[in-house]
Length: 88
Image (cartoon, rainbow, N blue to C red):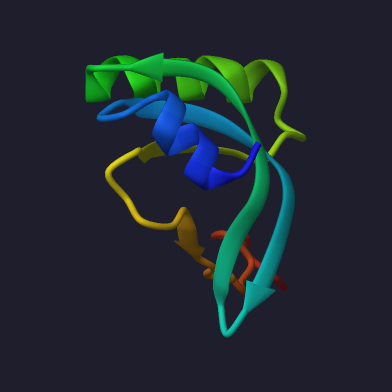
């Protein structure tokens, strides 16, 4: 489903989506096609569902967006480091 269809079908809602196809350019990830998993009115409920779904399926690319957004874009950040490991 494309974002415009999501916005039309679920106006003024928070949506938990799985990215099915994406593009990245200049550290901006754009969701081209997605599947709506759930809709919410409450921000906390949306994030609880995100965490629960992510724990069950960590390989899926999940996001929570409000349908008032024009485009579902995510800023990509890359982390480099040892995550606190001590190297000798």
